[in-house]
Amino acid sequence: MLSNETIRAEDVDELEDHLRQMVEDLSEPQPVRAAALSAEEAFLIASRRLGGAQAIASEFAKSDPGAVWRRRWIWMLGGFIGISLVSTVIRTAASILRAQVFSPNSIGGAILYSAIVFLGITGVIALAYRASRAGTSHGAFRFAARALSNRVGIVGLALLAMAPWALLVPLGWVISSPDATVRFSRSSASVFAQLGLSFAPIAALTWLLWSKRRHQTSVTS
Amino acid sequence: MPNPLPKELVAASSKPIVLAILARGENYGYAIIQEVRDRSQGRIEWTEGMLYPVLHRLEEQKLIRARWVVGESGRKRKYYRLSPQGTRALESDRADWSAIQGTLKALWG
Image 1 (cartoon, one colour):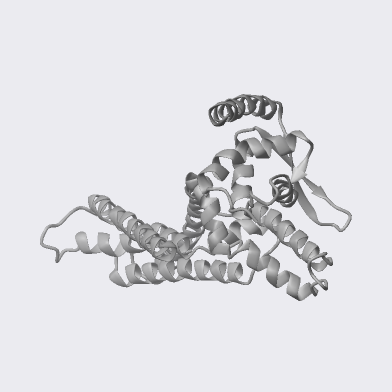
Image 2 (cartoon, chains in turn cyan, orange; image 1 turned 120 degrees about the vertical axis):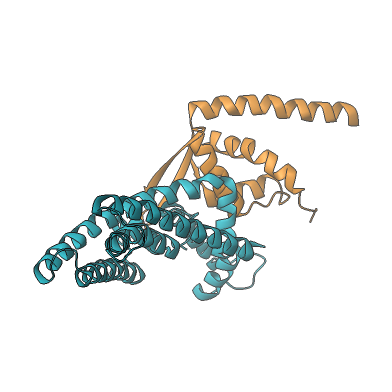
């Protein structure tokens, strides 16, 4: 239930107490019932009465439709900052390696650099995702785990962080290459590459959010 | 057993009922649902999906306050109580609902 975005960890605790209380009450003998229910029977009936996580989530979402987005933006921002830090480290390492192995402005160096950045960031995200799946129920990690357990967020943030940096160098290289029809200087080539690539993460994120919304409406309807 | 009340009436009366229950003392979700069931002789049957969002909204509006209490069993329970603002809101709700009740009573004789 914690993986659901509309319900906060605190709300889950409150509902859990509710469920337990219901189980206790059902376990007591009642005047109209011949015998008290066993713990298992009581739990089954109580959870059935409480309803599924999806049903409760939709009730919670109704009470405050904006809450989901407020929380989403917080973890998106947190994730973006986190991934920016990680990508800076990876990019620095890739630059150092590239300078050692290849001469400046060679295509081999550009490919190596992009490959390291791409694989590095993908690897970090995969590790974080696995950690969140493994289920860190520790309070301090709950927030991070929740943010990471959302696939849309991971893919969106990864693309956001990765797209400009991983592609910047090869695209700049193509634009400023001597074989290109229109030749630019090295610095203006980077600017053009950056401008062009800044659309990629925005388009990717828009598409992801749109598909997520479509998925949600198909679930609720 | 009489029919349950229409949804609109249940929704509209949820706030004054919650405030009125909490005016009698600090209470928690599960007990509030039972209290409502008892007081209405079973005519108002609140669900968890309805009550908790109402409680959280009233908490956000600062009409009620909440605190976590750890019971003897070590279980955490969220208790709600009326805030001074909530007391005032309850008074104005009381006036509104009495007006409706009074009007209907006068018309029905």
